[in-house]
Length: 216
Ligand SMILES: *Cc1c(COP(=O)(O)O)cnc(C)c1O
Image (cartoon, rainbow, N blue to C red; front, side):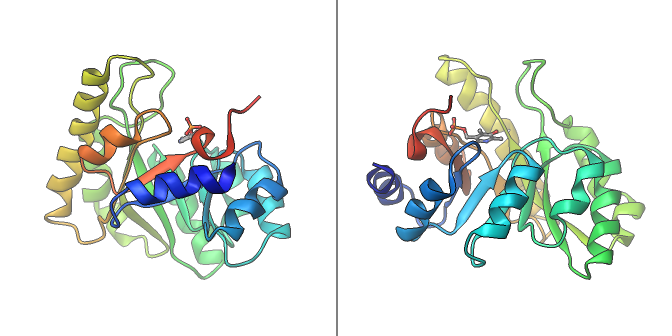
């Protein structure tokens, strides 16, 4: 079941699009099934759960944090995390830099852009996001690297709205990418909207339920 769903997605997405298998709440056995099929990047939304899985699963797995993280939890994943998707404050960037320095590694992250008007969605406004990466303070930080943008569309059946929202993120990403070579990743698209996200220019999709089945 997991293998078939993975196959189906891998076969239909363009080769420049990276698939992150979102394994939150799913067991190690389920993760290993996807691993056995060649999947190497997994995403979680809780630091503790991710760290437990990191400790007991094969070390060539790349772990992505896709949830909203509190600054005080960053230290637990700093030694191993491959990419932190949902950063929406300068405070978190400072903390990532500090923990990166302690671990002597550059930690990659994405800034979350707010493209949905839903109050439940986190994220930065366009001007706030640009201000962070253009600031002299950010430019001095050597142990954190902002590699692009993460965005989540509204949870709606209005697909035109979803498309418009993704286009906002895509436009900003392309504008920044022209002047900032660190910008390589546009993370958007989940189980029910990844096709629209890819059409809008996403090169990283985060798929959970379509691979592993629904979460309880
Ligand atoms: C849970 C989650 C996903 C995956 O959602 P599905 O609808 O199961 O594909 C993607 N991104 C984030 C940030 C998530 O929290």
